[in-house]
Length: 262
Image 1 (tube, rainbow, N blue to C red):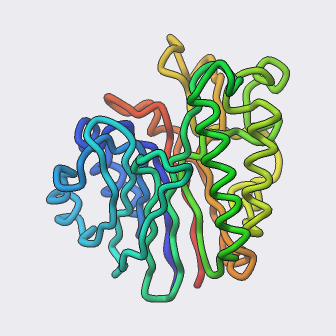
Image 2 (cartoon, rainbow, N blue to C red; image 1 turned 135 degrees about the vertical axis):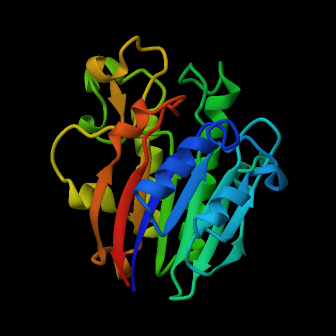
């Protein structure tokens, strides 16, 4: 079975329902993982998605913030969620396809503005969340799994517009990059995007603050697609749909795609 998967921090699924529908109509991924849905599950606008064939959904929601959902044209069963770091936030959901592949959809805490857990509680929560993910992967040893989502860290020097200028900016600090690497290593996860696109600047997020985000191009690669080693060789055709950042009432993130032959 060949299927295409996309991950997208949508920054309110109800507010941006039109561009979710646009993506589903124009790109037609088999599975779409959304983060920052900012909606209780029962208020996610599923009717339009179902009309396009996306009749399966697993989700966790909250009013006004966080929230993750997996929309699928393929049959999928829910296999649970985890409350990492005990935050009580809707930041993880997992679904399993009929071919046995488990898809984990994550929204890692952003971490606030100050990269110091003593001065910024949110930064500490982010590091604790990653530590819990790491420990879970150590104990569970995931197999035949794909992990996607807004992990809120740009790990490589070419994942940001200026490595030097962002070293002290939350999302690219050495302590965060190290924490993400430990989490990735614990599960043996392979970065599919960089397996396919090993060289060059690559971004999936551009700030709303930029007057002309496209021309300034001060981006970061915060959104990721990983796979366990047993299926990583099946992943290909990775891309970032940069154009979506310029759609009407856009998210500040662009969707990231990968295709798997499994």
